[in-house]
Image (cartoon, rainbow, N blue to C red; front, side, top):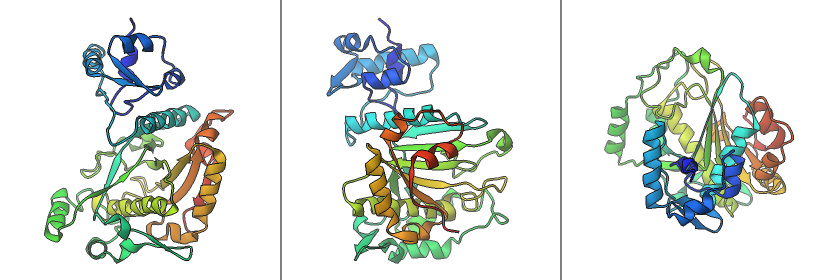
Length: 328
């Protein structure tokens, strides 16, 4: 029995369907046998590792010198959503080459920001206009006042040490919150030109010298989706003032780096409608966090792509729908 397919069930991608494994170029013929042997759990068309399956994964990890960890479904995330994340990551990877760059595509990352603000105090809607309530938060205003935006001629990698951040949070009773993404794509463009940069102590995800595309599945209500946009603002504010000041919008060679929030729907018509609804808020959608952009995209558009693109910049603007571009 071929057990190698089990190594696909890692911590980034704990849930697979037969169709997804075939899409990834795997031999899915042994799935039923692995299920019968008690290595895979099968429910509603979705497979995941059992405890015995995790043990086999770890054995194969040692044999094949894999760096990945065995994955089991997160009880806070439905198995269907987990499989959708894997599908999106696969389709994004398969849709373009990104020559001269590195495609770093991960699922289910939680991006930290400060301060934590009650969800009902992030945004409100009044007569069709959006109001970013977080801007009135005492800790938010204090952070903005005490940690100014840094320009590229002033930036240093030791500008805000982690101990300074920890002290500020402790002194002010601030907590960390998270922008929860379904898939994040860090595009390391022309990476050979940036080999001399040794890194930043506050940048464990290696965000510097990348274009950052954050993909989320939309919620039912517009207010809930705007809350996600608000957390997108707050994450960028923390990057620009606390974590990597001076390195968010310009890379180490002083080229533009971008942040995009992309809502991903099933059907393309849904993506168009959502983009139009978000676009109706005008520049207020991103003004507090400019430069950044908000887009929509659909599984349908990715699946029906007729020709593989060279670059992500040829892909997303072609098949996606913008809600708000960077304000100039």
